[in-house]
Image (tube, rainbow, N blue to C red; front, side, top):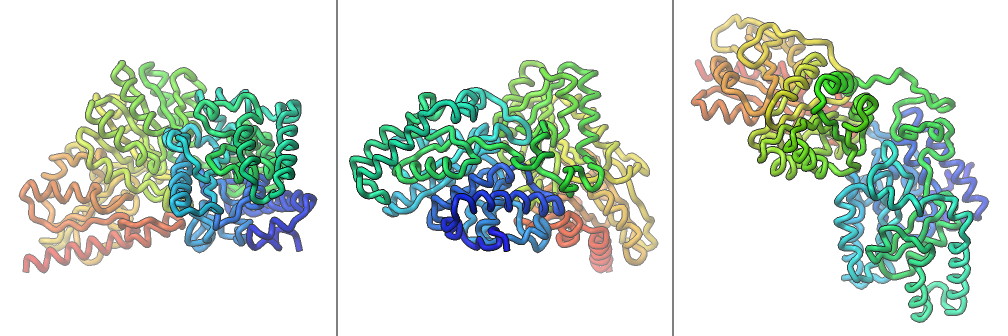
Length: 635
């Protein structure tokens, strides 16, 4: 039996010798490579935090001490150390989540995987500990993997840095990267202190630790330091290194930089921070992908997230297919060559959203703002004011964080900004926080915003060209995964397309199916499954918001309408169509299909669509039911 198999709770770590800890770290890395290579997942970030997570659990006592991970994708090691060692179905239905999950363990606190939130969570928890007089409890925020580029982290730091004694430890996991090398002034300010060479050459860190140990011994109470010793430690914490970077300028106590792969150094630094009695930053230098040669040699994203791979080589089991993203990547690069006023904008995800080729062609015209969606949108409004056309490429789930900026800075000012939302709708394996299912409901609330949803790759290319020529805000959303076969229009009616049709054999049962974007494939497949003599016309509205008057006029000629969208059913496109029909005076039944107002557990996209009643069969049943209702009303 290996050491890992004997770890059932964090307390088990404290019984291990230094040699056993090194063996455990090696076992964990081997386990992660073996298991994640079979399922896919966030490999690089977790290989980089093995020793750091072990040290945290040896120094702090979870769940009494609250450990909050930001971002949550670096929590695999934490899961292994808290009695979750079955990674066989990682990120699959019935298996472990790829992020912390309260349903899995009392050691997990924050479930959502959106970056930059941990400091605010931990500050709130620390405030509660302080108010309750819980002097023996600590809140620990593990932040990194680029998250310090996010504005919310600095809002939290501004409050944490006020004069306080809150029991809060900020562990900065500094690997210099998010998906790719981290950008911005924060990185430049940290760079002089993050070099590991300084730890090996400058002896002040080791000298300070020796002084600390002697102080504790002199105090006579190593576990609970006497006041005089504590006061001395408070004076000395920030002076481990002369340059404590930006944290020193905020007045925060600072320990580091510490070798994030030395358990001994980490434990000494974390113990000092734990016993200080107020907010302390522990700056740990880690290496993303540590211990796995293919990741270490990868200069792009250090195997941030992988599909199924061959563990020996790191090569994918199946050829990588980037589907919708690759089409956007090709087309925006073409447009950039034709139009020098186009600017690409991304939030720490240059290559995942497809702006890599554009950046290679025109490095001065692609802006990576870091994990800062709010800034990306308002900055883009500024670019638009000055005569450029920004194309902001985001994952759909992350648009949520920039809603106010989209509403007040972009839309209210009619800024010609195009927002490309990758991974819209159901993403599946990434779990509740990464489903991009709120974007259409959000867009429906925003005046002067035009939203499009392509049904296939040809339409995606067309929408990008159309959006660039709109003198106002536009949004184009498309899902994760493979692109379906092209769905040609049977005919065009006004500004929308008819893409599927079957003639009714009986009067009073002509049903229109309005299929939003990628749902056109299932809607067309449903035509042949509809029961009886019902007539079916599948309509792709193309620009789905706002609802066009020509579409409303056309729909009024049917006996019933079914809408289907890969987004929240309440408040989305279907709701807007129903309201538009009512305002026009049309009185016909409307059945709206979409995602229920719930947080969805991780599962395959097709499984979730089936469960949410959006499969071809479910659409066919809805059509038949709508036609039956109409016939009964007529009779």
